[in-house]
Length: 185
Image (cartoon, rainbow, N blue to C red):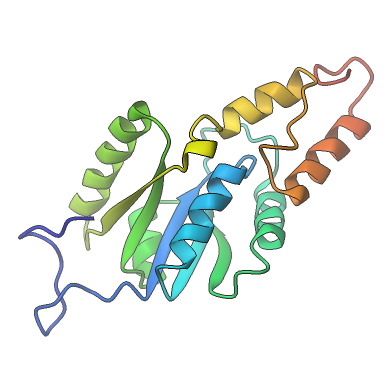
């Protein structure tokens, strides 16, 4: 995160304290790469809110309540991490939570193009907010929710890519799927 001349300042002329930050995403499903960003960001900030975004433009594998529950289980050992959900503008949610900034993970160059554009937009919106980019650890740079879902739907083993709560939930989907579903082995 770089604070520029147009960055918001407190009454004493300093940038806002990063006591509370937001890590937003659809987390459908949450991956070990997401959780790696959570763990690393939790070491840096007093409070990290992992915020599951309800996006009406997407058809998620899991409902928002299920994603929140899986994240809460995965983050249970991190006392300064809270899990929440929201719909609407991220900038509005950040203001509502009185957070200092947005955390976004970056895996590959194409992530940067999209996330940088969104960061500029969030800064431009009323009450603009800064974004801090956290690069993925090398061991997770290739893992995305989309690739995990694809491997799963094709019958592959996803145990190395997702936290245990997510693995159990996805295996449950496989067991309860109607005969002939695409992800049946």
